[in-house]
Length: 180
Image 1: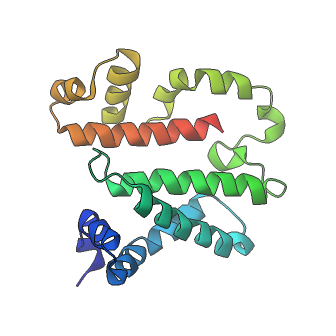
Image 2: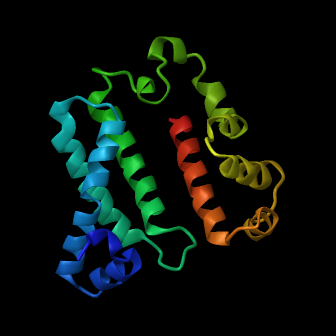
């Protein structure tokens, strides 16, 4: 059986019912994702094990706090939880060796320290520039700039509401990174 064919919702349901096998399968399913996230954070190899442990804790937190009735997929929810844990841990452990801002935008702390307040106060205005797909830009414009509801955005763009919710979660994750 290929673990990537397993449904996250079913696994989470089984985990909450006490299945240790389902929990092991879910951890195995997202094992490679943890390593990809670690590589994306550009940390020294000596911190890989620490970040891997943070990734495992993020999976545990996501399992215990995920609302199965929400419109967000478990994968997107896990991405947000893991990114936040990694960001906090990165600031805690690696700040002296690699300036935190270089992970996201290549700007050193010295050149960025005067713009932090402006970025934090106006990151919703800047959010449009960091989005990579036209769909995400349209969702951002319709929800944050023009104030449409998620169902209206789905109707306007001709897609499923869940796709709009997933895009909003991705946008919020990117905006959260800007706020650090």
